[in-house]
Length: 346
Image 1 (cartoon, helix red, strand yellow):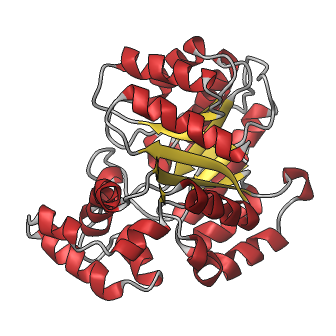
Image 2 (cartoon, one colour):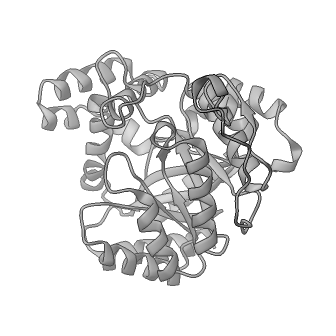
């Protein structure tokens, strides 16, 4: 099992880059940078490629509707080039508030768009002339929609790899099925190991039945708050706000994927209360309403023996990358946490 981390926002980037280099020295295997509607992740990962030499660099995630398929393929190939083959392309649908509110594109058709996007990217990476006729994307553009002068082109450069790994952030059954069929990695946020088979088992089985054996086994990538502590209460409280934010406020009342996930985990009443409080502006109360059971299940917080048992459970389920977020305010503490986790897994 590999270990990684999620690099945050809000601090000078040279500090984050220095931290990433320190994590690499401490045995970190992967670093992921998100985008949402902040600074783009691509330019920052290019900088990180120059500051590191071994770790995988990944996007977590690039929204499908933020770039054309060819631009996404060029971007992935470019990052794989500057990192000398260390890039993983993490993609996802994002949500209507970001896609329509920030990118001005209609939200919908995520499953079909993802399938076509992956097909186009892999065509570009193989340096084949790009010809694609799909429901969502048509390349070259048909003559009746443009000048008629477009022609199939292939990437000028030779990519470092023709098979750049693709991971998909997926929660819904159709997207999880597609991920198990086509992608190298699956990134389920707020992963509850005890509920994996109940919530996603059938979708994973359907997708795996259609999977090309050349893709190898699906790599499950989970993001977990992490701390080795005896008294868990104050540390669980530090992990609670993000759950409240996503369950309560990352989406509208009628369309919140994370609220739906909490319901599927068996916390329907709690999810409704969290959302009511959060949308009413009572954020502290919404945070307090997040049940301890959910925080514990979706984190690695506790004594070393407990954390080791949870890691063994995740490994048994097929988790190949632990993207931990050390629950610490200082870099030295976060670095020590990475070193401790490395020793537990080693």
